[in-house]
Image (cartoon, rainbow, N blue to C red):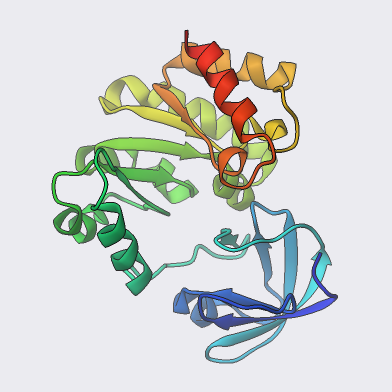
Length: 242
């Protein structure tokens, strides 16, 4: 867990729990004292106490687990993230060394982001991650520019609120036939399997309902990226897909 007070700074890595790196300069430019910040799909909630041009001081009002590469959201504003960072370029160059690689773009807003990434990825599939309410208003435009769409319920739920998440998923499902693109569901699809060898009954039913409602597949994150039961997850999916 985090200490009671933390510093967020512009950077990509930190070895100290009280210092949290944020690689997006726009977060510092757009955040004000008093704002709340949600980290790791709202598992951690911070309140900003003061700010500088490339740092924020915050108090922890909801503590939880936090590791590298987790998302940051705010109920007070939608961050306009800088596009094609040095980290993006490194990841793309690394990924292009493998066969059958696709590239997913985070926080797509309206589809225009494809013009920045398409020239960099060549013939690889370009995926739009639907993670904010603005994107939900522009699904048709996004589908015209991207090869595949993922409904990413972690960041979407953190921004819109859990009460809205079911309604937003229903709206996405209703739009799938008109999008004419593969649509995948993401965000704690098998979340209990991060720690457990079997999915919950609720997850199994939800997975069945998702496939029946038009989703082409599912996306796993923590289940395979940092979970303790990766082999069990793969074994379950092999069983499920038979």
